[in-house]
Image (cartoon, rainbow, N blue to C red; front, side, top):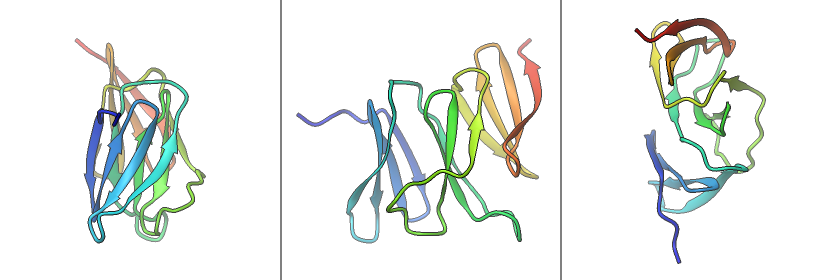
Length: 129
């Protein structure tokens, strides 16, 4: 029996599909599917495509694995997944968005969290009103 997708994110040249315990990527060039990432427990999945920071960082894809987000280098073919950078959230994010210049905003229950995504550090916590 095939699993029901729980997350879908279109990126340049592909789509990332989240299932109960893993992510897959479907490439538009040849419609081949590849396994990206496993995670231990079911969670609210969030993700986004992060543009390159000139002379500092390549284009990356952010995917959540619970309280952490892993950054995959999207400038290279993603075959072997290794994570050199991570975002750590204080609680599981419900949504993420990018703003310029280079901030990652995440919506959590009760507040917003602002990360400087060149360093992936928390810069500000804003309570909901």
